[in-house]
Image (cartoon, rainbow, N blue to C red; front, side, top):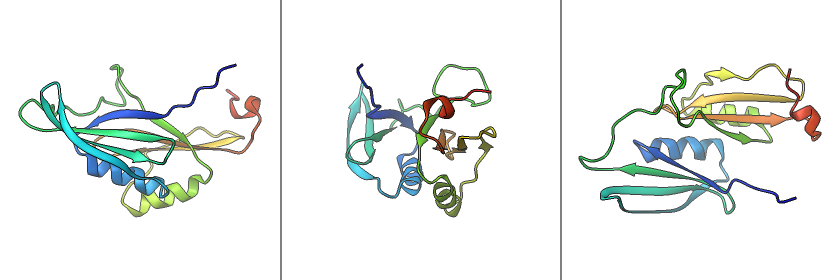
Length: 146
């Protein structure tokens, strides 16, 4: 069987620095891997890769009169688009603590589950990230749906 691993996700944001700081607080072992600029279909942009040597998030910020100032999709709505990105973590409490220290509060605790805990945070511009910690290596327990 072929295995797949998500290498990166590419997000459009209205401000790179806020989202990058959020990710770097959540994952202190991550860094700015690379950054640059240029144009995307005639619109000036800045891009940053935030991650480690194996996984990263690309953040794109656009400038000028053609840059969109539309907000992220309403997470309570039914519009198509990104709902959230989820990361499996080893120490959920440490991530919650680091994000709390820089001013973020969880806006949604996951369901009560015997083999996992999860917590949701929303960046200031409205991108939601989920962090999940599993307490079992057994797929039938990790993926138990009640």
